[in-house]
Amino acid sequence: MHRTTSKNCRARHGLPAILSALLLLLPLPAAADQHQVNRPLFTLDENVWATFYDLPSRRFRSIRDAFIRKDFDAAEHDLQVSIGFLSIEAGRSVTSLNAPLNEVIDALHQIRTDIRGQSVTTGDFDAAFARAHWLLAQHYLVLALQARDAKQHANAGRYLWATAHHLERAVLWSDARVERSLVSALDATREMGTRLQSSKNPERVYRDKPIATTAKVLIRIGEHLNRKVWISESLNP
Image (tube, rainbow, N blue to C red; front, side, top):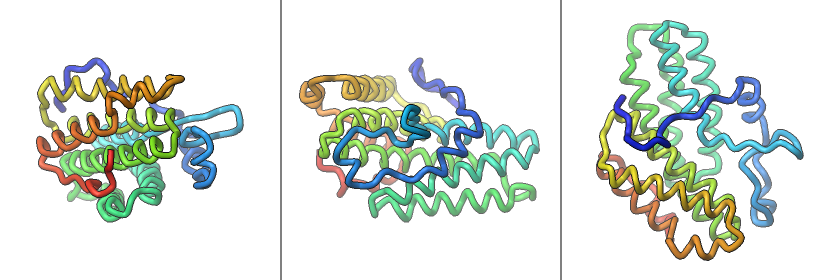
């Protein structure tokens, strides 16, 4: 696949399989707790926190590579982990994203069922993974907005990072090229997300309108990839 020119486009190293499995078993924090503190997405115990918004990125490449090697056991395992992750996110997404996310989940289930036959191609993986990343980008942008409104500014920053991450990978899995200005815009989203996570005065960061700016980038990328924006009614930056 083509790569964008940003040095930040390289995927991170994967979590150990046992850590990923443990994370998938963890309950989501109660809604009341989410309005009180900036909780990371998942916790292993009181001292160890982990965000794993990029779990699909780690698994998707492994799945495709395993399929090419005909290591179907590995591909099926990582598909099931990815389906579990997407199911968690679909369960806490806004209503407009429920149906499209579940369609992607169904598509991955079907690929897993048929993977040992002759009907599955690498193109099936590419299309499903690109769509999954596109929908996750929208999901995390909504969560960034909700975190901002709940005054969970560090979480808003984390979700902005996640939005940029998944937008980038939606482009990569679509095998598309984007103009340099969009790459720079994604880097700007990351920079604002980083500032929100560490700033003692987040109001200064919000002067740059990180949510509204990222929404515009998402719309531009959607137009470039000819993909639907499902969250228009949920965004009120």
